[in-house]
Image 1 (spheres, one colour):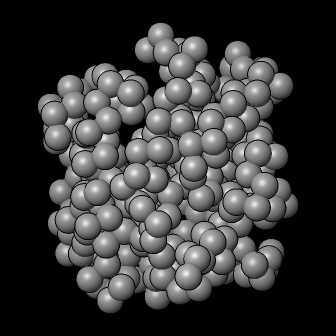
Image 2: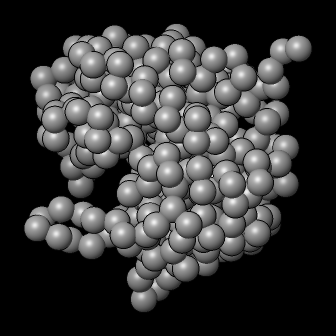
Length: 300
């Protein structure tokens, strides 16, 4: 029997995503400070091992190791001309690990710059960059595209439009990174939850979510409730997903340290699920142990 499409699957019960990639690559021997995305070509065995660890822990879907694989981010490592190679390889590695029964999402992160006039990016060129990456991920065999850690609405919109034009029948996920402020949850660029969800819903994403940010586990639960409440008034079909960090990071000797245990993380994710979120994973500070605790806690 053919596997259910990811678009159908996200509408049916709990779907467990994976957790952090960068720290897991380092734990398996990748030197700190290298271009993680280039490891898809240089050290594919390490990338494959991370995917397999998450799948063995209970992930239903893994994200490709391509978060920084757009031409702007890769240019900082002198790999701007290798966008297609890196993204196709990332998709193929994730697909190899996932096999026929699990799912693969092609990961698209921000450019690292701002659109004019605040920054130097031109809208048409940024759209071309996201299109280039999305095309390579689809060619590599992903089952959907996920746009993560966005903070500005203009860049988010361009990424969604580019991904949607390439995706065809594949689902498009999109998320923003929030902090807790005196004015409620906002991204670094001041976008609130209603503004984010209104934009994502208007652009037709299949799943809208939040990931990363600098909030506590209790605040992630609060954020999930706000997402679900606002989304319900915008669209009956919009799926909500959550990829929280392992709590708020602490700065130790210049490094971000996450002290939340797998059990503490899973307990918070269960509360996020109880708030109405069925697609659940982890971001910074999470590991296969955190994802296993989530899968066990949710009984999936």
